[in-house]
Length: 141
Figure 1 (spheres, rainbow, N blue to C red):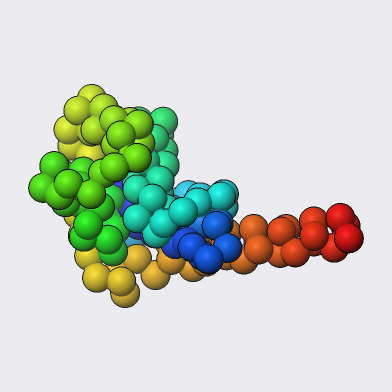
Figure 2: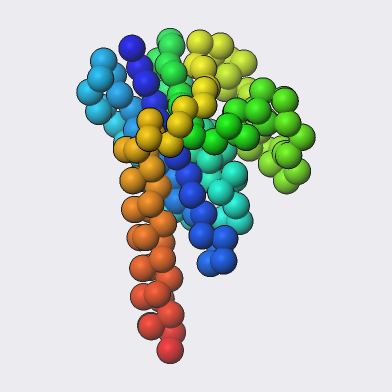
């Protein structure tokens, strides 16, 4: 069984976000992604993490995978049950296209404790970005 944890977070006051993706195959950690970038909301970070998980599953030729997020709003938006998708059309189009091409890649909500590995990766990505911003401000002063 292939199980993929995703998490995203955003420091909205500072304008940067981090995402984490952890791939488990038969219970063993197989791959990880930890990335940071400019961002405006935690919801965008969560959706970006889901998109990265789907692309990774597609690239690794997974016929079936369970992607879990701790953001129920993302699952509702992806499944067209929520209207909070303003400004997210391109990202949602990518997510929906991959799912259409790979119908056995499912996305589900689980409580926060279930995605702890991905949460740590997202947090580390945000910290790296914050340190990079602080370092560049020192260089420019």
